[in-house]
Length: 508
Image 1 (cartoon, rainbow, N blue to C red):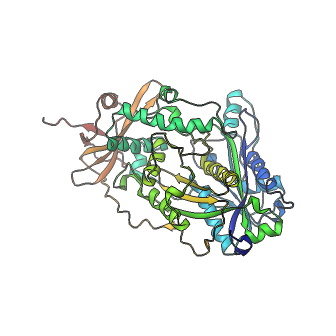
Image 2: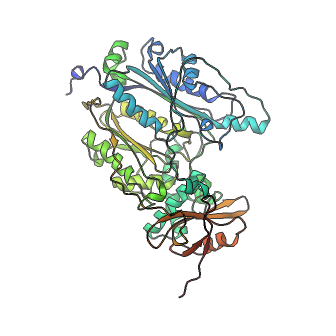
Image 3: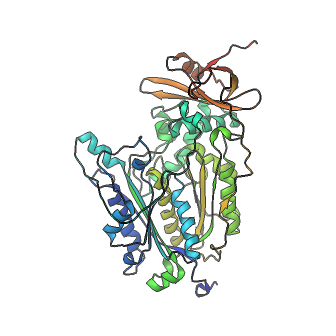
């Protein structure tokens, strides 16, 4: 029996979690939802006077603050952490607004656990939310909302963060994450030796297992379970994906976590039954898609998960439950395969139900997975829970292992960042001339195939991204009818990095 009293005072622990979902539209702004989740996380600790002692309040970057794809006409807070603080009665010394990426909640847990262990922080609140459902409902209904808030308190705004795409990728149509993931998914399809139809069916079977869990989760945005047939019958977005296979951002969801040191938990009177320990954590950065040796895989995903397991001194067989980030099916299979887990839907790979069915609240989904981990750890006190996440296009990975069993890891001394220098980048060609198709995607619009994007490779092994010309409607149709993988293409000389391709007739 472990004597908890012997744990070092600077050991970081999770002591509170909260989640909120609004299934019916309201006028609530995202920071109102984040404050509600924070209030729950604080209240469940069972101690008094917690909010005034929070020294760090961190909010996950909103979708509307990171891209023109999610514009909000109702205004914004100029200091999201202070928006939460003012509602819960906190006055933190540090107000942090994160970078972009689904890895952010887990990555910030890594940062703050290290800081707590080193004595730089003592009580940290992490929170985040999206209210895109409220936003879009108001826009459709013609309602006027005011979500503007202005504060004078200092803010550590960490900006957008590193870009996860090359200029050539962006200039040639890869301006939406779904197109990137379609290229990854297509490469996986080829490696599995499946036809397009067979791969779509396999994806639907995998994701059906996620939907089944979301259907019984009280914090899921969407009611009911989606069968594999339902998932396949949804409208097509690309030649591989239907709408029901990918993350759904039209949600009103919020989640929050409370972290502190063992000493602070004792000082505040937080009962030991609420404490959840961190056994393993790691994070790392993958190469941009064009540079990856195998674009259907992300070695860094496995390296990060393995590092977290190594720190915890565990094998994957010792993990009792896992939540793998599930923005797209290939994001799940990439991690599951590297961990040796089945990808046929026979093994539960989520606690929440996943981003397509539980809901995809922007960069903050990982906070919900972590909140589920905290609750599960308290219910099943001998179990170990693993949460994995990623940002970009399998670009920024972070994993953590949690349990109600005490951990004696010294987070002040642990190396949690995995070095990516072992990943050898492929060369990229600015003017490829000719090359063969490594992967492709055909994007759909309201009336059918719109255009195609390829990731190709020249004879000497250099990579490039190109697309069909705007007026070329025949090539996408041809690609849908016949798998073009490995086909030879001619690429026009670059015009501001824009490359267009056409098929080259080869001799039999």
